[in-house]
Image (tube, rainbow, N blue to C red):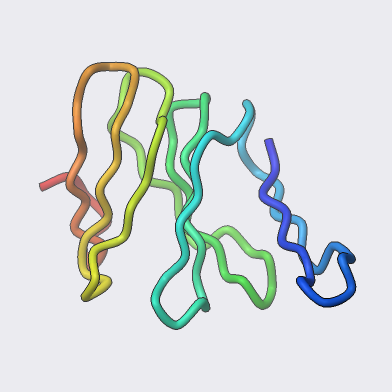
Length: 98
């Protein structure tokens, strides 16, 4: 239900992002590490601000658990796979499935 970031030097938790209603299966960071994307058993993908921990938006479209998320190298698209036997391609500018 949460995404937790850890300080690699101290081992202390540095940010806790709460918002999914079921466990999180997958995460990926933007290239500049300012954003993190999480996929969950609640069928959703969330975009988080690493600094504030705020959920910036929720991407909906899968009808089963989200097993993986992967941001494109240019940061324009997010790819996701789900238990609904689909691979989603998300246009992050529009926030919608392509």
